[in-house]
Length: 103
Image (tube, rainbow, N blue to C red):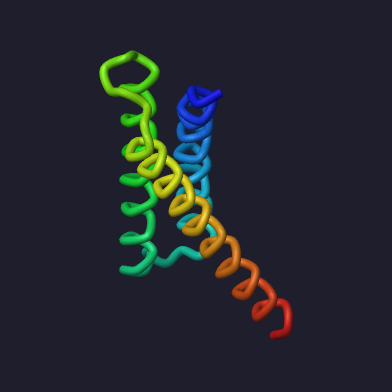
């Protein structure tokens, strides 16, 4: 049961990173403006959190590290951070699109 967290993290993180890559490519082409500084920082933090969750999960699944409370906390915190950053990106896009629709 405990390895399900790590197995799922190893499956979800690559999908999240692919979604981030595709999202950032599409936004740049639509607006024609370079990404803002906070968007770049947000994307980097998203990628780092994803890599941390994936790496810790890989170490636990491979048997290199023991799956304990610390590794669970790291993976859960990293994935929660990724979901939070993804939500912020979605929220920003929805508010930006609703503002453009009103104009």
